[in-house]
Image (cartoon, rainbow, N blue to C red; front, side, top):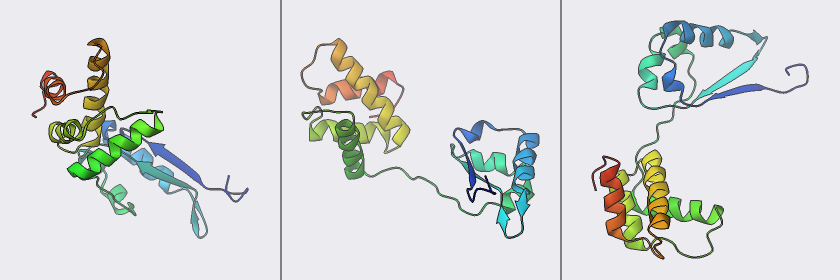
Length: 151
């Protein structure tokens, strides 16, 4: 790839599952592959907050981290925009969730994207199974409760 003028980038989702020091040392070893003036490989790790604890198993690896980004919970307005966007991309041709329902999803998920998706998916499934034309706030509360979430 380097000879072709391209860059190797490895994306690792759920990197928080890499919980062994040996794995962290292997990642660091790959980062040592370089040619003058350029690294040969870049890793982008995605994971839950405990990823930082796992990375700390190898201090020299932590020193090689160039950029860190933490996703904080989304505020209610951003949650609403996020859900509307996802529905539009999925092909929704009409409004499925009222503003009150979107607010309840934001409350139940505490703005955590993974929980927003989980609540939304489950609410849509429950609504379908119950043959509901419109999703209501109580259904969102019931789904959040069944998932063990507050709201």
